[in-house]
Amino acid sequence: MKGQRRLYRTFRNQQGFTLVELMIALALGLVISGVSIKMYLESRRSYIQDEEMARLQENARFAIDFLKREISLSGFLAGINDTSGLNAATITTDCNAAGTDWVLDLNSAIELINNAPTGGTLMTLNGTELSCINADEIVDGTDIISLKRTSDTATLNNGVLQATPSLNTWYLKKFDYTSYSWSYLTGGITAAESTPNSTYDYWRYFTNIYYIRDYSVSEDDEIPTLCVSMLEGSEMINRCLIEGIEDIQIEIGIDNDGDNVVDQYKNAPSATDFDNALSVRLHILARSISPVSGYTNQKKFRLGVKNIDAFNDSYLRKVFSTTIKLRNTDLG
Image 1 (cartoon, one colour):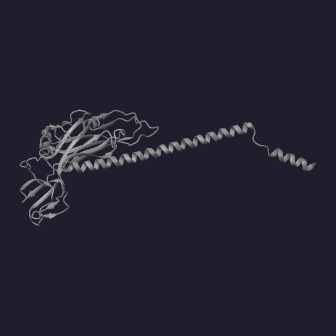
Image 2: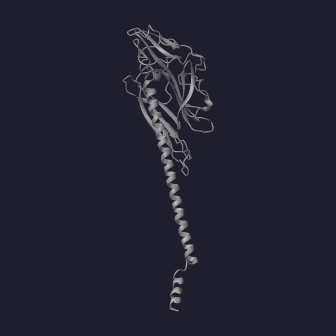
C-alpha cells in the first residue's frame, strides 16, 4: 500500500499545464515571436536603407567628380589661345537643328539650358537648338550643359606618339606651333608627321552634352540617369552613364568688373556673361535606385536658387554641390 501511495503522488506531481497556464504560455510565445519578427523587419529595413544610401552617395560622388573634370577642361583647345581662324567642319549628324556645323564650331566652349522642359524646344542660352537629344526623355526642369574641348594631352607631340591614335575620330592638328586644322583620322597619322621633331601635334577632340534622362535602360524602369550626347566618329550618339541622378542645376560665376573675382552667380547667364565666366557651381540631386519600404521622404531640397518640394514617396535623396574653377577663359 505504501508503494501504491508513492506511485499515486508521483503521478500527481507529473500532471501537465492547466488550461490557463497553457493560454498564458501561448500568449507569451506570440508576443515574443511578434517582437522577434518586428526586430527582424526593422533590421532588414535599416540594412536596405543603408545599402541604398551608400549606393546613392557612390553614384553622386562619381557624377560630381566626373562632371567637375569635364567642366574644368572645357575650352581647352590644344593650348591654342585664339581659334577664331579655324572654321567649323561638317560631321554626318550634327546637333544643331538649324543645320550649321555646330559640333566642330569652337566659338562656344560652354552652352547651357536652364530648366529644360520635357517635350519642349531644347534651346541653349546662346541660341543653339539641340537636336541630338530626345526632349521627351528629359527630366522636366533639369539643366543641360554642353562642353567642347580637346584631350588634356596630345596623342602626337612634336612627331612623337604619346598614345595609340583612334581611327574614325576627329583631331585638332597643329603644325609648326602656329598653323592648325581639323583632321578626321581614318587611315592613321602619316609617317612624315609621326617623325620626331616634325612639329606636328594631334589632339583628340570632344563635344559632350550632359543631361538627365527619365529612365536608364527601358522606359519602364523610371530610373533618372545622367546621360551624354557625344561626338563619336562623325556623328553624335547618346549614352547613359550614372543611374539615380534626378536633377542637375548649374550656376555660372561671373566677373563683372574684370578683377578676376566672381561677383555673382547666374543660373541663366547671357552670352556676354560667358565671356566673363570664372567658375561653375554644380548642384546634383541624387536618388536611390529602389524605394525603401516603410519610408516616406518628406524633405524639401534646395539646388542653388531652385527649391524642390517634398516628393512624399519612398525614395532616399540627397543634394551634392561643388564649385569648379574654369581654367580656360573666353568660353562664350
